[in-house]
Image 1 (cartoon, rainbow, N blue to C red):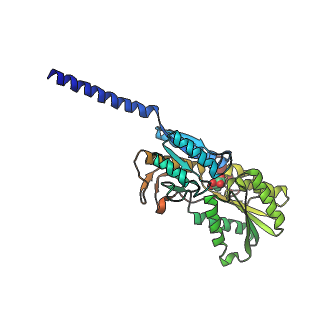
Image 2: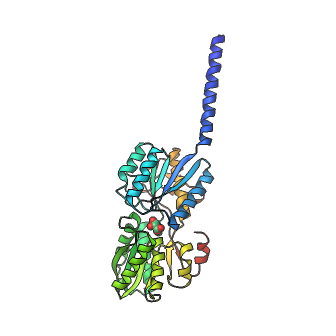
Amino acid sequence: MKKLLTLLLALLMVTGLFANGQQEDTVESPLKIVLLVKSLGNGFFEAVADGGVEAAEELGNVESIYMGPSASTAEGQIEIIETLIAQRVDGIAISANDKDALIPVTKKAMAAGIKVISFDSGIAPGGRIVDLIPSVSELIGRQQVQLIAELTDYKGQIGIVSATSQATNQNEWIQWMYEEIKDPKYKDMELVEVVYGDDMADKSYREAVGLMQKYPELTGIISPTTVGVLAASKAIEDEGMKGKVQITGLGLPSEMQHYIENGTCGQMALWNPVDLGYTSTMILEALITGKVEGNEGDVFKVGRMGEVTVGKDGVSVMSTPFVFNKENIAKYAAMF
Ligand code: RAM
């Protein structure tokens, strides 16, 4: 009997210790959640990183890690994901440089128990659990054409300065721009060419100059990338085309305030990138801890952002873009 009691006591101690040990473990090693962006040095993604840190602080059990290749290539991202698999991180949110090329490596990551989602620029279904997009792609694309039409009085040749030719998000938006312009109200407007600045300031600048030289009748440029719209605005001014060539796009208010206030860019749109990083981190935490599986119809509770519902093919939509102009730019520039 005495022996039995001792055994029971020992057992209790062991389980007690184990439970304690587990508790300490959670406190000591927070969940490692990586925000893997298209490339480093982009103010948009730096704001995304701020959102990741905010969510991590709020959740308490998360370490937010910000990573990206030096240039916007799928190869650079694949290399990083391989390292993250070896390091056994808990979750990765990826803004993809290619919707298909990343699939084999993200599948490998998921097979190793890492939760993978895409955000901003998606990975095709099969290569991630959820794809968090800032707004409906159709709405974003159509709105870009509407914004430039208002600036050019619905006339003339329009060029597009995009990011990389493989970018999932820009390619989807551009497809909708071509749909929108079919509307008879744009009969005097033409989308003449898409050029690619690769989300590099210097290349975007050169491509914008190239468009203005190639098309002397150019009345407007749409640049649906924060890097591109900033570089193209500078190119318009440097080429003495301010007032002759209008520009709109998706711009970061803090970077574009100068060009909005001096009238080079009459209006542009975007969403809050801080919210995008915050929400991606919240979603990953819920997936890692098993609170939500990420199936169609599932609802993620995402702190101050409320709820995000998983749609068809895992696509989850945040909200609608803001439009910035002279009246409101200063307010938003202070935020992101
Ligand atoms: C650039 C990137 C990003 C895109 C924004 C609008 O910073 O290409 O993916 O969402 O622009």
